[in-house]
Image 1 (cartoon, rainbow, N blue to C red):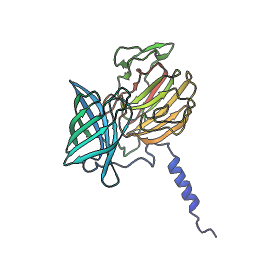
Image 2: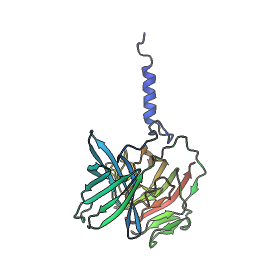
Image 3: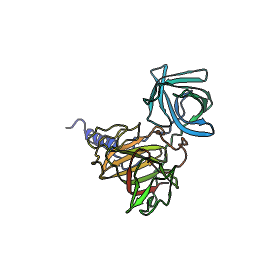
Image 4: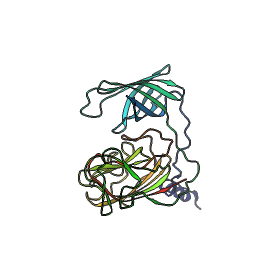
Amino acid sequence: MRRFPLVPALLLLVVALFTNCASPLAANTPPEQQPAPGIEGRWDITIYDDGKVYPSWLEVFHSGTKRLIGHYVGISGSARPISKINFKDGKMSFIIPPQWEEEDNDLSFEASLQGDSLAGTLVAANGKSYKWSGRRAPSLHRDKDVVWGTPMQLFNGKNLDGWRAMGDNQWVVESGVLKSPRSGANLVTEKTFNDFKLHAEFRCPKGSNSGLYLRGRYEVQIEDSKGKDPQKDLLGAVYGFIKPSDMPAKDAGEWQTYDITLVGRMVTIVLNGKQVVCNQEIPGITGGALDSREGEPGPIMIQGDHGPIEFRKITITPGR
């Protein structure tokens, strides 16, 4: 007589729940998040500089019962840890050490909490002071399955129709291939998207670097990464946030493929036919984002300012 007849079935169920990535709304999709009391939570930030605005992002959470810590993403670079955040009587402040070698000074932040918004001042590494504001980031949770539409060719193989360069254009189309022969402007689609499946075929020269920005806000890294251990800033990663589980990169100069599904904040990434990210949450915008308006649709952006890169097919399937 078997004492535990249900154990095999339960084990199979557990395995299925942890391995199934067929649906973007799989079992590990987080529930709707309610704003945490006080300063805790995620904040979409706008920095103001002489009539121009720049996106940024902040996360605040507690360590233990008393200490507040967090992460910060600036105009460029990756997510940076914050070891201590001071918060009392509606006033917040924290300091971050320099991220780049050419920076000599810390970044210093202060702000006041006013309902679900922040308003404050940033003193940058160059000593200049900037005003900034923040609003609570949306959860982007989806409560029903996505219905997929008809695939669209974002690149027609002939010209740059449907795209615009963000600066002096170095992008060209030759023999059906979209090329950035040198560092220059980023390239963005004229259309914007919410949830989608994206297929891209790309070729990255040795030592070069690029990226695909989903909704113009979340960079999936492109880099010459063959033979390297997975990292948050290498091929297959959501830059600074999510490390791929494996590194099926091809040699530099070979054609490679991305198949990316984005639903709300949940992303699945297949690199060269191998799933390397399974329905994981993107916490916030990455460095180089177009804006911090996470609740809005956004374009696909190709990074063109970090070396040569080529594409020969870019297809998107919108969801609704």
